[in-house]
Image (cartoon, rainbow, N blue to C red):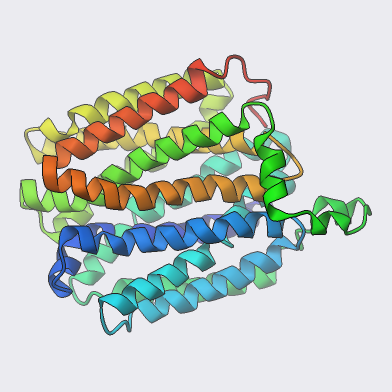
Amino acid sequence: MERLFLMIFFFTMFLIGTNTFIISPLLPTLRELYHVSTNQAAWLIGTYALGFALAALVAGPLSDNRNRKHVMAVGMLGFALSTLACAFAPGFTAMLFFRFLAGIFSAFIGPQVWAAIPVLFPPARIGKAMGIVMAGLSVSQVIIGVPIGSFLSAYHWSFPFLAVGIASLGAFVLIIRKLPDLLPPTSIAGLGTNNARVAIFARYKDLLRLPQASRSFIGYFVFMTGVYAVFSFYGVWLSDHYQQSVTEIGLITLVIGLGNTVGSLLSGWLLERWKRNTILTVGFLGSALLYLVLPYIPGVGFLQVVLFFMYCFGGVLVPVLMGYLQSLSDTSRGTISSLANACMYIGTFIASSFAGSLYSIFGFAGVSTFATCTFLIAYLLFVLRTGKLTVTSQA
């Protein structure tokens, strides 16, 4: 059954990841289609991220007291319908609205996946399971989902949204029919339902009072802001600087995705052999260096090598960080997942707006330098300031 659960979670994260950044390589096309500037087109990424971030802050605490299977199913159905609606959006404003709705519904899906893994898998396999599921996100963004979106959009811009929407309806059926009930710990233990009345913000307050929690979530937010500042504008940069077409950008994205997926799959293996702080040190500092030199790569061939290793480091870092955050508390995993995802999507929202100004003023070098600074800050928060982590690598 564990393989079936992994397949469902992998597929679910694949769809969420595809829809999140399916517009990134399409920005050159969409800014022409809607006759908007690069900054305005970037709101198609930022609006989705904003919807997710706002909803995630509520979705996590609420789901900690409910059957996670039902929460995930409702979220997936809404996600499917709002994504299909994007394919029929009559204009830029309508597209922004449907993207916002898709972001809201996706906020009820992803946190349930991360919170369910420690429940459905034994401790020794949690790290590997998170790495495999994170690989689904990587595959979606940069190997299959987003590149296929690039290719489909060459025929018509609406095709990627139709494909993701229909596939999401299939995922909804899988969740309903194959996942077991995922009841909150209080219900399983027979402790009553009083905990369901705990205020949402009280849950966050209790969580952030835990040792190292506040610093860790700030570090995760800073790290994600840097990652998605670059990822949001790499398509525009490849088009403007290297004169790459949408199809060529999709092919380069395959290389990025291969690196990200390799890193995600390696994360569990590395956790079994290296200390967590060692992995974080190599990942953060290696990423900082590669992002710093990225704008100065002379040719597309060498550029792809650098991109592969950049996203390999990122693929290792995210599951390791998510596993550590999940280990902070075993009774508020939905809240932890939602706060982590909110940090990621608030970072994405900020990145897609602030980095747009950087790109307009300083070019892609300004965006990549900003990302380098965020990685160094995250390194300070996670490694130099945390000391010896008290959780195990299998947590």
